[in-house]
Every structure is written in C-alpha cells, then in structure tokens.
Image (cartoon, rainbow, N blue to C red):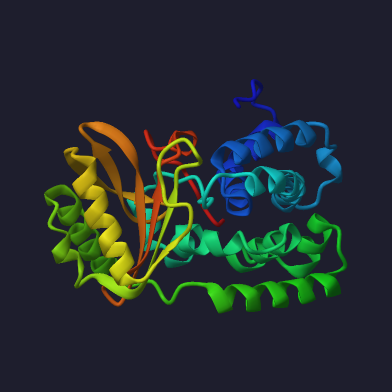
Length: 298
C-alpha cells in the first residue's frame, strides 16, 4: 500500500505506519491480515476531517484497533478449522529489536501463543495496555467499552496471561548459546548434545497447516521432544542447514532441508535451557522472511 500524494493525511499515516502494523500484528498474529487492516485503516483515515482530530496518533491507533478487532473475530472460524496447532506468522526483525526487552517479549512466539487463549476484546485491551501503554480512556473508545469495563477486562486478561506466560526470558547471550547448540544438533544429527539445553518441561509446537507434516498436538517433556528430534532427523535423510536470525525480536533458526527452505524454528530460553520450541512450516506463513519488517511500540 503506497498512498500517492504527500498530503498531511498521508504524511501522518506513514509516520505512524510501523506502529500501526505492530498493533495489528500483535492483535492478529498474522502479517498478511495486519497489512489488510492497515489498508482498511488508510481508507477510513483519508475520509477524516483532520481539523477535528486532537491527537492524530491516538485516532489512527483507534481505527486500527477497531479494524483488527473485526478481523480477529472473523478469523475465529478459520483458526477452528486449522489443521494442527496454530502459530503466529514469523517476521524477520532487525537485530536491535532483541535489545528492546519489552518489544522482544511482546513479539515473541511464546507470548503471542498465550494471547491466542484470550477473547478478541481481552486481547485488544491487553495488547494496547501492556505493550503500548495506551490509557484506559483511549482503549475504551477503541473497543467500544466504558473505561471502568476496560479496567476490569485488563485486570482479567493480565491474570490470565500471567498464569500462562513463559518464565522470564534469558539473557541474549544465553539465548544465542542455546540456539547455537540447537543448530549444531540439527546440522550434525548429534541430538545427544541437546539434552543439556532442553528443559525437563520443554514444549515443542509445530505448525504445518495441513500442508507440511507437523505434530498435530504440542509435544511435552524433554524425553518426547528428544525422541521426536532424533526420529525426525533419522527419517528425513536430508542434509539440514540452519541460518541464525532474529525472528519476532528473538533468536531463531531458518531451517533448510537439502538446500530448500523448510521453516522457522523459534525458541524460548530460560536460564540457559530451551523451554519452548515453535516450528512454523506452513508455506503460507513463511513469506515475510526475505527482508526485515519494521516494528515499534512507539
């Protein structure tokens, strides 16, 4: 989407575009749907009388939230019929994103998977309040609730997420060290070396979307994940190569089989051990990895 004229509406929209995309993506977990939301936001924005808008950034966030909420509700049926677990669409992000702990956590596969368990309104309120620090009055206007109701929703959503969110992310050095161990194991077939970095309660979630093979349920526990990796590598018979990358603001691997791109392996690391592995193989979700996607919380 590239508006033609460099008029005030266009300039304002472009100035906040990365923020609006991040809002929509964190609400939807889909870059393709987030782009559609931005298109809808733009069409509504150009019809607004700017002289009547006190805070243009807040107004744009409000439009984006409303459009994302509409789309989130319509996505429910699509997700219910999805084959196997549904993971967010991975985004290649700039290395600097990993240094912003708040942004990296809010974009992480681990947290976004937890957000899938919220209702659409709860997710919108949680994202706007926790990630973007939007005040309750602004959120109320965006979701069509009273400020008092929004406070209650925010409290409920926070409790829900806190009870399910992964433990504190490790330091960047610990995370990259764990990813390097995973890369070594995948490329050499030496999965024994993984035992020391796989947490006892690790969870592996695969997303093939019914197009590529993936486990239809999350795999729980070190032994089961180890056997799956060991068996999968043995049966594949393919040469595995990996490229380290920053995906959704966190260390990850771009996995290739016999030179063909196969998927993204994102991880969550706690205390030097991998507690979560998230492997996206669905080709429809692997289209945003050729270049970095600009994201921001501000």
